[in-house]
Length: 253
Image 1: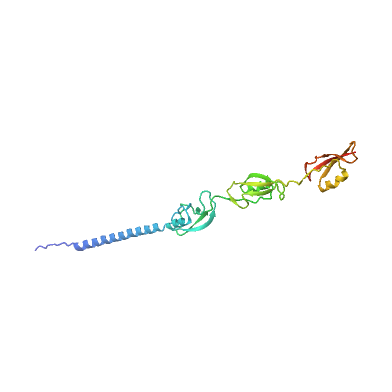
Image 2: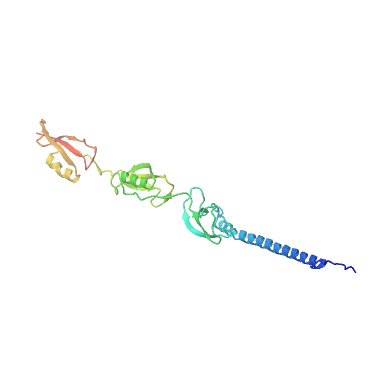
């Protein structure tokens, strides 16, 4: 009697094996999707929190500059005033840090307002000599302008009486300052008296009262004239003389 030999493959049933394969495949897909989403989210978060570049706010008014900085996550801090020959008064003339620099989010950018073109303060040179005034002006980056003279009883000759622009005013570098100098005071003048025909002893009082100084007295023979009579004088009668002038008299012998 013959026996029939049967072989059986040990393992899961075909339907159960296929189900497990699909489950593994689905799990792998889900895990991969989660990883990709996490990576994208991390990138977006990192991108959103990156330190910004500082925008250029020079030439803007402070309100506009502050708004522009806030758009990139930065603040604005006042840094004072500065002269600037190009940017009008009140607008931002300088910023720290400069435009394009990478700056930590939330930090403050310091801005400086423009005072307009660079100015110089005119020094007071009244009472100075011309040489002293020129030295002071050139030391302040200014120049001597027009020079005029006028008589003055208050200031010595050669001293500055007035200046324009006036002291402590603000002007541009290199500006000229005009000066008015004292020419001194004109001496008090008198009309030369007529002394001819008078005795020298009689005119001494007149000379003293007029503060006239006699420089020379000489005697010459003069027929018909008593001794000591003035026969000639210089300057002549009627001439203009001052206390600083000297006169000469010629007396008869």
